[in-house]
Amino acid sequence: MYTFKKVGGASRDDRRMEAFRVVLEYCQLMDIGYYGVWYIWVRRNLSKTNIRERLDRGVTNSKWMKRFPNATIHHLTYSFSDHCPILVGLK
Image (tube, rainbow, N blue to C red; front, side):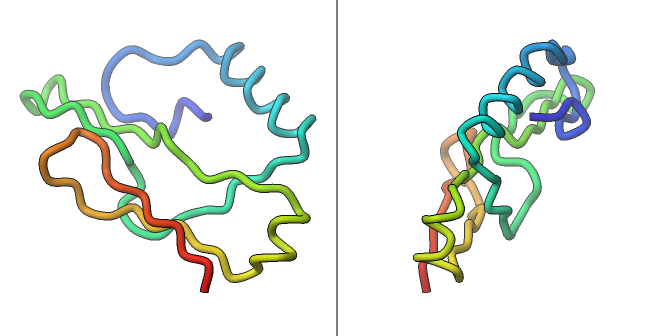
């Protein structure tokens, strides 16, 4: 969603990212937040070309948050995939 949440690789088109943020706002969706590592995707290459980025996220609306006020998102440790698994907790 923001270019500063990416390390390495080509930069994202800020206009597209802004358009995505506008859609989230229009739909009254908010990011739940997360626990764990800040990135969810990693391109494992040499350190010079390694890319880490938070691509996936959990979004919700206020009605859902009222129903599940203790909801959490956990970025788990990845092993075989280049994406970290995401665990949604509803407590």
